[in-house]
Image 1 (cartoon, rainbow, N blue to C red):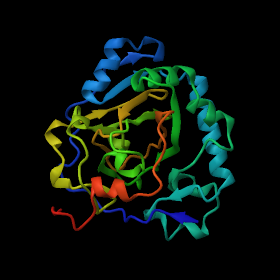
Image 2: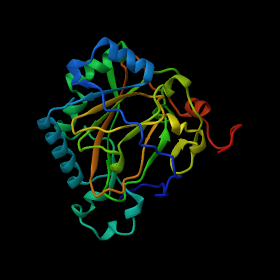
Image 3: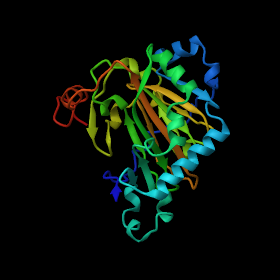
Image 4: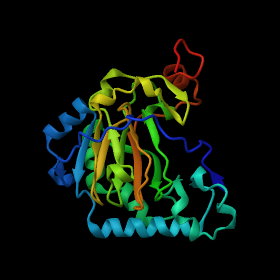
Length: 279
């Protein structure tokens, strides 16, 4: 049984400001215009409402539920449930799961989301080349105990050459709201380049380096999709709601880009404790 190794510590007060919220966006992948692609490059993100139809969302939820019931080493449970998990059945553990990774190898319903033609078309327009899938996962916020994912840049986790553009696709399977851990981001922060990351409540940007006053929340209805740049600073607050928040996340790169052999270059760029900085 895999359990999240980071403790469920409370984030500092004021780290997540929900005052500004993004509610605009394209109405489906077919509605994405050239101006929207330009916005992605300028702001680092693009919201696509109703990107996946209700039937597709229902199928993905069923696929995810089946994966959870099967169990396996790809399931990671919340640290807050550590003491109770050994005595619980698989069904009882359902609302203690934090992450599944990978997810598409054994379920055609989840793979269909990653291979959605509209999604791949828009990501290809952003990348300027046919996209290739680099990572697939499900990100879950269990009711009441779902811990935060502190502010970070996804590129800090990826072993690809410096300057590689990777596009994340975050797909809501439940309604995602500030109270149950919707996505928060800093528009335009991808243009600032890599930021040092630290092992604190997670592998994260130092709390004091986050320009909280510029953050926005991105609530989504089921089937909504947030596309974002790999250097965009983002995170999700903890959930203290009784509502689940299930989401899928896929990352795409240009098909011509190959991964590095080790993490040395990535850590040289994104840092670790001991560099000429402090947190």
